[in-house]
Image (spheres, rainbow, N blue to C red):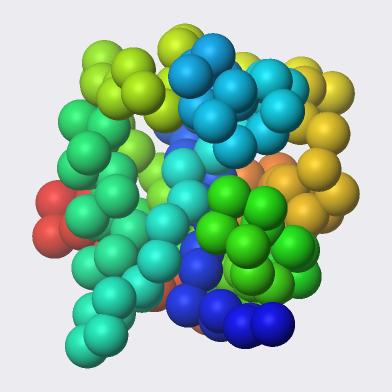
Length: 161
């Protein structure tokens, strides 16, 4: 069995005054039927870091697919292992956080049917995979749930950020 270690999750968030909202994506019927025995679920943007690509470039590439631009990107101080049935492999997934400007989210209808911006407590109740829950807790502890995000975990800050 193969272990892929170039996978990442990104908890995308926006600030609205003192409030922080995270982006959740709901799987499409087609994706659920094709890969997950019809089971639909809430998830977050995730992808692979390509050969020669930095993690910040990979996250920026993925966010661009959703019509979003990062203001800042942080290491989430969390990683987890899963068996991904879609790719039939074990995956080591690093967790990151990306703050974005408020913008309309563009979805690929083959992958996701809807999206929601929610506070972290509601995200915890909607996602049911342990890796997602633990990753969100870590992001909240170091980046979004504190008065000042941990500067040492900031990997990217936009020039106007």
